[in-house]
Length: 461
Ligand code: F0G
Image (cartoon, rainbow, N blue to C red; front, side):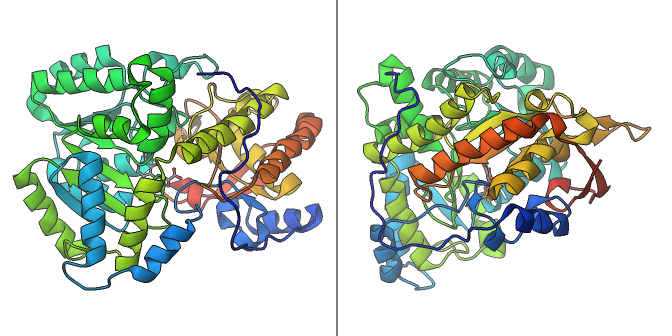
């Protein structure tokens, strides 16, 4: 990729409507953090200055999308907005059966409760949490086999989101092809740092799935961001448009699951599409029982209209260039300051290695949680721990089995913050570096049995 290291790229849009942000003091934030028992998920959004908790459903829509909202057709069946969305999604995926859902995990529940079940095994470059949860809920097993390069957080490598192809064949043979529910490719690979997946890797997966007659599912909520990396890092695709690259990739799958809250550029919405008629009939039944009729699936007509427009806008070359540059800009500047970031920078977020930044905090005192709290206290920045709070387990004696990495994710909402907001985030890290030796870890004082990071309570050690 042509080097643009640390260069800022002006936003390819201007602002038509503003949402005020409240400036708070450090003392105020410390008080709020205490009230939230040191879990930023429990903060009120009013008390957050820059919210980097997630890029999901937090983006700003364009004037064209807002105009679409007014044009939304709210008919129960056969709405014009549904026809518009169906047309756009068919063109993108090449798949004949399109089901709208209210968000990604609804599509996952419908698909995996149909093809999952006891004795089934799913293999992925990395299952996202809700994907894994929906698979395991059916009694099936979910196995992650990310590429070898992804385990080295700092290694320069173009497609760290890839699946380990050698292991894939071995695992299919080991478990028996008839027991494999599907191979799921998460594009980009969120849980492994928002890293891209190459077209080459996807083609290999397709051919292995063909060889063993196994289904291939694409979880493509960040498919446009992935296309950017393919175009600029895989020479064979340099002359295709981003949309053509996405089309080529999605056509490899047997089914496509999408949380449209990411590259659909909307605040709510999801999709499930597939090639097989009989599978689509089973999924349609579940859709009608739990989400809504086939032509709205839990969405308002206006939501579908905005999604249809968003799915085209996301492939605009100026937007995608700005999007990927703006995330990289943050990561490159943090790295230049000596903050250990997962490298190279992925599409939607910058991931920080908190155990490396805070080596004095032991893993069972959650260095990632300490950094998340410090970023809020110092700068009103909210982000999420992706380490032992999220993935840690206990052994039979109650001792923590730490997660593989202690990461903190700064996810960038789409078209929401400006260059100066990002510069502000970079500056706050100066304060983090200044005080890092004095930082203390945390202990958990309450935790629920599942997905504890959302509601756990903490106390400084
Ligand atoms: N798949 C991936 C790869 C995701 O990143 C997400 C959501 C989902 C599925 C589920 O979609 O939220 O619409 O139900 N990721 C968000 C995040 C929550 O913060 O990364 P959903």
